[in-house]
Image (cartoon, rainbow, N blue to C red):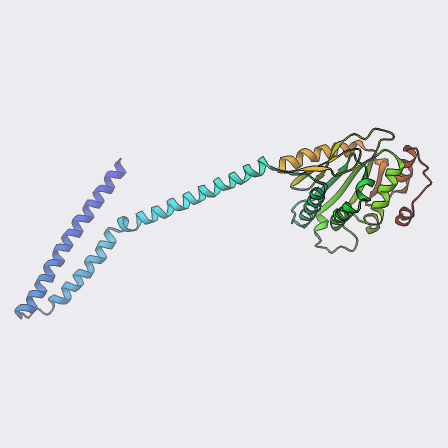
Length: 315
């Protein structure tokens, strides 16, 4: 209240000074014109009036600067504050949208395989600040039905190629984005025919590249029924769950976008990974583990001495 009173008195005083200076300036101008009109010898009167007029203008600007400029500055400050608040609001909305996540459904195998390929490539192409793990699991489904089908074989190979693009080799450049990634694949097997088919379909592509950031482990479930299950692909930003049934893999899928989803499904995958025995770790940084392959064949009831040509070459 006291501050407002001081401001009001200051404005009143400035206005009185301005009015007084204005009256003096007007009188000087009148005398200057009168001197010219009457032919008086007051030659100094006109320059004096012009100086007084200029002084009046300068004085008004100086005395009323808080009225002329301070409101503009206050408006600018308010705009800056409003802009900062708006940015904070937008940032909060972006975080809420990211936290709430989004879902996308893929109703056919074609759509699903294309989405798996795209998400994998996009993940490997992103710049990273911390090490990441791409997690892929296959808990059910008959692989031969899909991989051997000409209608889907090309799309499955494209997905396989996308995985290989993220693999680190001894020849990878120092700035390769694959250096930020590790790839873990966890598969469930229940008979030797299925296990050998998976090895054959992976050996020529993944194993032959001798990647340094790739691991594959198997859950050995001999003779167990192959119920329909959901199997995940988990990147740094998304999780895609695919539905696999006893007849085939990649029937349909649901994509979850959001950090909370990747954390949730990553814990699920990591628990399943830890439950699988390290004795069933077929490939790691150390290379192909033939002892693990023989052990899995033995547990599945097959002959551990039987080796496919591709496996033998990779070993």
